[in-house]
Amino acid sequence: MHKNKLPKYFLFVDKYEKNILKNNIINLGIIYRNYLKKQNENDIFKLRSYCNKKKIKFYISNNLKLAIKFKSDGIYIPSFNKRITLNKKSLTKNFAIIGSAHNQMEIKKKIDQGCEAIFLSPLFKVKKNNKNLGVCKFNLLTLKYKNKFFALGGIRKQNINILKILNIYGMAGISYLKKNRPKNLGRFL
Image (cartoon, rainbow, N blue to C red):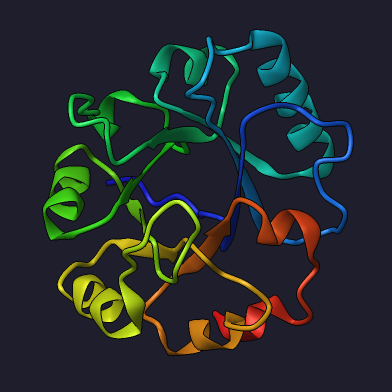
């Protein structure tokens, strides 16, 4: 497997916005995932350009053809996608395969699909889901595997300190990283 330096922080976006970030987080990756409508290639182009300008790694969800066309840094395979299986050897050296999971079965599936890093969620309680993993279950799931894990789900200012006791490579967010520039994020990871 190729060694690819992954960012420590990931932000999920579903469209291009002129000022995506209100801060300058170092070591950030942006994942474009739009499941509600057809992929907007104009948005992807603008996001790719934004990421190049800001030196941010850029990933596209669920579509290898678009990921290659826009020279993304990798592909993100969501937990519900059980059909894509990628061979890392057939991709460029620095192309990353990352995915998400919610339980042990999904973690195994992501590993089978070639994912080198897995977003495990939800760590904390979130609005759309009443179930969350919590710290103990999260750590138990991650200790079984050699893959890199990212905490995702319900991360807020009130619970960010808990990240330092998790077995994680980094963290991801949909809203937290977009709005905040947490002080010394690096000390938690």
